[in-house]
Length: 429
Image (cartoon, rainbow, N blue to C red; front, side):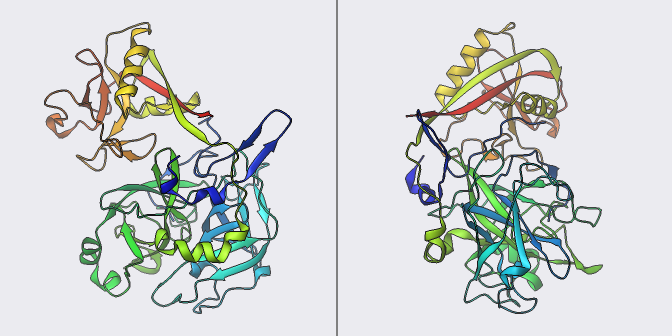
């Protein structure tokens, strides 16, 4: 991985040690590949966000209160307001809280989840409970967490990943449109917006509270972080790893009920990279051991599915169901591999769905499998001449091979077509 992107080499722990091999896990990599606060979001599958953490209070009654993000074997990052005495800047007693990782269903205990008590809670010394300034805290567990398929650390960035229009994922068990905590972990896409646009959208909320250590994101279309999502992460997938870019802090209250969030306002997030030094100074000794072997490259294999014609979303789910994902094409080499896979398939006449879509954000195509903008980092695009054209303003998904070759064009997402899946795996040096 690109060492300049993360100080996660300090966050990596050993998983297996035997006579033949030493295995370790990088940060920000999903290990479970099988696929079977957030309103109007989609349910995630077990193992999709193995760093997402549930924070529970155990007194006066045991109940879920906030989310957090695992970044080391003993370190969880969350919002300060989640772990402080209400209305104050003082940390709650460590005996009042516990954390759980590896959890998917909030109200159902699984064999994969781990629970830990805390040895300390570190709240930023300049946290302001009334204005949400420096709304960040660290939770250090008494015992380290063992990494596995459903428990992994997220990466921490060393430089800003918060450029305008960059799309990230927010994750949580927060209130749904039914105005109750979700039992199933949910995620939603959210583009980062400029400070000026955020303040203009709701001056009474953001003009006096949004600091230089925060950013705003969201669609204002009913998809938003909500009650119960606080402390959870805003994640971006960059060069093969998931990064904790932001921490869910606050949004506007609903006009009809000030105890509920507004689902049509942007959400403010703490910009994690602004606190890199503070995180290092307060928890470096709690991070896991570095890997002895690093993956040097990610290998892609494409499979062409000609046996059934399906919609775009059906294709996405069918790829997930076999432990793969709908194809992403991010380089000339990828295009070459796709072309080879088509040539070896049972039907070499296209088209086939690939994983690009601008559904919900017209003109801004992203790879649905990785939630990264098409052309991000590598700059690679391969549209046919005159494409995408959004014919009749109703074409929001990408396909290849309609006119031969592996050029792309946009198409109606409900059109029925064949599809191409991919498998991505690290090649160990």
